Length: 147
Image (cartoon, rainbow, N blue to C red; front, top):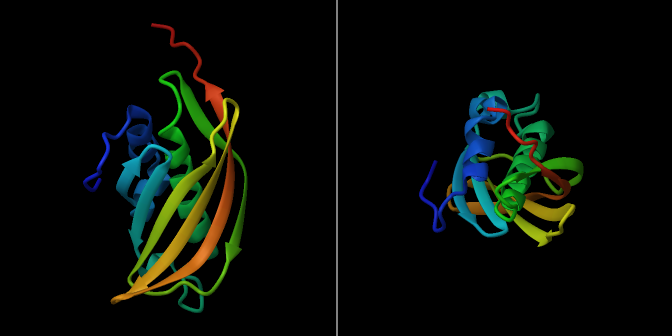
């Protein structure tokens, strides 16, 4: 994980360290602040679809997971978030060296959070907005542990 301006909560750390699929994709946690999370992914051949662009599933995964982490910065110690719905607009084909995602909580709630994710493709010094997603997450109580 990269350096962050805010301490990383145990829940955000768990979201990244225990999600094998996210680790396999190569997603990096770049910045965390209350209600905000930024991630990135170095694009490799395995992330591309048949025409050489980043696969829509990769974009959707990055948008969803980053949104979950942004929402997780606002939950209590005995709570967690779980996506219940998301919509993604693919604005242009994504290609380049790296994808960056910034997720911002638009509306935190006691039961439901709404988060917006923006995805940018970077190629050299050029950065283009390639997708926007709206992610709705349920705020759930963690079951008590039996020790």
